[in-house]
Length: 121
Image (cartoon, rainbow, N blue to C red):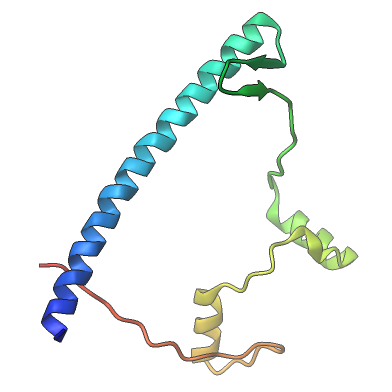
């Protein structure tokens, strides 16, 4: 197979993936609406559990974190060394900016990765 054929196959595959992604997005939105409708009906009926022949549902309250003051939060993490409150992921953009400016960040290294950019016509 030659390069032209591979590029055309790449574009066709990418188009198919985008169509599928669009369908996944639609179904995800539909599921969100259905979930909201189920929870509203359960709440109105005073239920925390409900079932059909195909599935059972349980509704419960959970707590999710939200930051209202990043400076206070980062200060707390730095002061208490409770770094487990953060995700362990290095920002590629911030790292690259510092690396290109000649700054050495202890415990890190840059790796070179070849990337292919394809622009559809």
